[in-house]
View 1 (tube, one colour):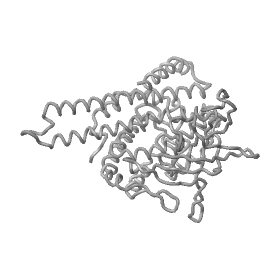
View 2 (cartoon, rainbow, N blue to C red; view 1 turned 180 degrees about the vertical axis):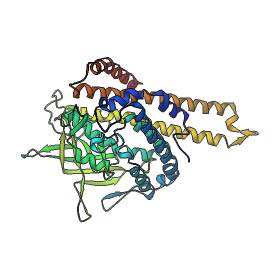
View 3 (cartoon, helix red, strand yellow; view 1 turned 135 degrees about the vertical axis):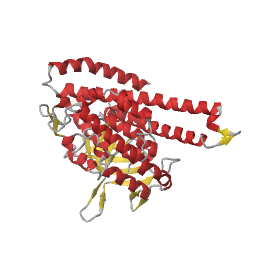
View 4 (cartoon, rainbow, N blue to C red; view 1 turned 90 degrees about the horizontal axis):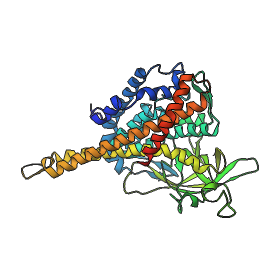
Length: 423
């Protein structure tokens, strides 16, 4: 059986010897406090390897053969809803059946409590098979994790330190729906006249007398924008002059907007209009949408004026994820080039044996390996820094040994994380 894990010796090297799993397992398992959790690194890594092998086979056997169909079957709008092709539907039935949407979600919220690094390694394999699939997949479990992260940052998640688990979190129903594969989310930033320049965003959110929020405006180029839950950046503050603290980025806030409800009779009530699916040069399997918000009910995340800060919280992990997606695409390109060069003959031999072509292939392989080294290091230190930071914040009864470790390791991981981001 083909496998994008077993056929990649460099990827297996990191899994088997290139990652300090013991440290990552310990922080992921909250210091081994949870009764239902793994009790040592060996147990955890055996499970992680089973997941990696399963994803490798799924990617090679069920996604990769459908890549041509995924590229041909463009999503389209029918009766106000986005419709994807049979190939994409089949692929996500397989992904849902493998329960990959719940991979990194804590057990108490219905997940498998795996490290984000395992998700990133899986992302490379899925992206190697088809990058459109990986892009859409990231807006399932990834958005559920974003909901949890935002709730933690704003203080609406409660922990039981002794039991090592979450006892309450603000978006638990939405997370459960995503974990079950019944919904997904997305991030809405770009507008017709503003993209990277977020200070020019014009979508507005207003609060009524009862304290309820409503968003009005347009968003375009929203990846997987046909999803149910949208994190929307909108302007909430009026700036009196350019020096006003609420001018530019300071006037933006973050909201969670539910774009529709499915009713008992099988119909759908929409609160946000899906205007079109964007036409792109490639990446055709993934639906990229334009949306119109007309006083769509919204829930404020954190405090007013913190939208840019919360956007960065999401984007820091998203950048790492896109790095692994790109790595999978590069691995696929290298293997396609190598396979062609080993078949195409010129001057009595296959071109892979011509010095110049052989040098090109070696350079490609080396570049892929170098990027993988950087990506793994970045993902590892990002996750260690975030999880050690959470332990520092939510583990008041830490042992002297745990406290010493936090003081010793947290600055190191944060510094290395910053260095890999600059790279």
